[in-house]
Image 1: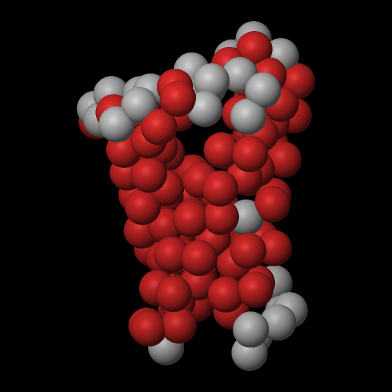
Image 2: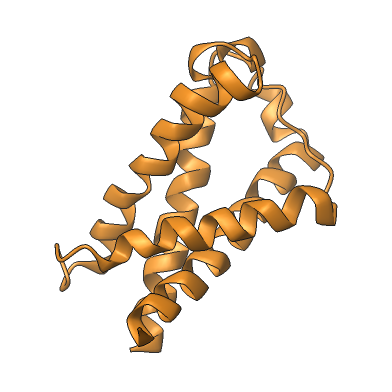
Length: 130
């Protein structure tokens, strides 16, 4: 139970870092300079669900793989929320096409990067906490 709570909390922290990265790229127009239309406002309504989902994704760290290579594990596990975002959320929930390509051709690359931030911050939080 203790590990589940730790993984959830670490995932929430990772999601907060991910959200700040997404917001920062949008507010500094990095995303738009790459031709990607992702520039959310940093509001509670946008942030809270992302943090909760990040915590739920953090539960993936319970999987018994690469315990000694936590950063690599975070990188690999970040591919799961990336795949869901690109192949479920964008096409079916947000109507932005497969991989969110309607938002720009580099959208998949940015999503991969942002979720990598989640995975690495989550892994570091777990490593520091143990």
